[in-house]
Length: 506
Image (cartoon, rainbow, N blue to C red; front, top):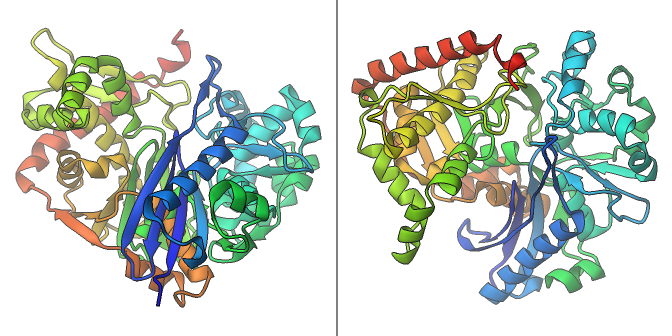
């Protein structure tokens, strides 16, 4: 009997990834394709939607070519994507403008306005999440005032997950985990809420929000056109999928309340699941999880590993060239440089706000405490530590709402590729940190949904138990606790001290 397979797609910040897995839980192969990002000085972060689909199709095609797998042996596929942002299509399914990525900040003044005029306080008991500039509903409020012609042309307002699934199937749906992070859903009723849309001034645009579907629900089949472009077999079922925060959690086997998931990639995402939603204005968001009956409580901001990527790109060109000649990654030498310095040997602090933060929408990234004897290695250590401290501020808040510390933390994202960084997380939190055997947890989370949708497994929980495996665990070093506690206190003190400064910054 031929082996049977599942495919997961992950649409993240700049790269589309496709993963092929067999139904025994083994990873077969990955492929990827890069999507250009269009950045503007006014905070715009966009992508060409047609190119985004082409790169998804290319990633699938390359995956099939690389493995030689018969497309007829693929049982199902599913899509994971970044949360929020905005992808508008017209009645014929054509993009009406560039897609907007979730790190876009052009609408930040709308967040301030909704916070000041009481709108946030009115809707938060239903939406259970903070507002931020890259949120789908906030972007629609912005476009209503600044680009209304595009909203008039639009038939559907989609997330990245929903747009790519539409391209595969020709059917339009809104997957529930994705839509539940957009401040459009009443978390109690798990449905769109007219009062929320009215408060945000976008009631007229409820008509462009798609009908809701579950993560492990079949939402269409591969069309003839998509089959021609991807190499998939026409009629292959496509599952609802999920947003990347939920995907990483289920891929690390977050199926009950005992563990906490940390996603340290473009975003700092920190989350646990529970059966009762957490209603508190200080929590970043409570959303609907991919397991029926569970909610996910998330603290997050745009303050994670992308800060290191920026530093490497801007200031480590020579190291990058040298490591490439050796067939190695520049991040290997970054890890070596950081591990050569003990935490107490450098007092430089870094605020990882290059791409924004929910501490203050006007806050800027900065190094503080630099002296003439410091070198690049000290700056790198400060970046590693600053990212961990930003995560830990979110995590400490979650501890309070979950009733204490979890048994362990499961980590995903770019940081998980660095044992040095993972150990730093363990030492700062003083908790064991588990790292998955699979690096691409977005594709794995999507595959878990696909497996449950097509009946290869009885439930998402069963599929997660098959696919989720732990590579190693970093045990916290109690001897590092005092040094990191001292630095973390200073980090928080800096934030409080600089709070009145940001609004005057040029």
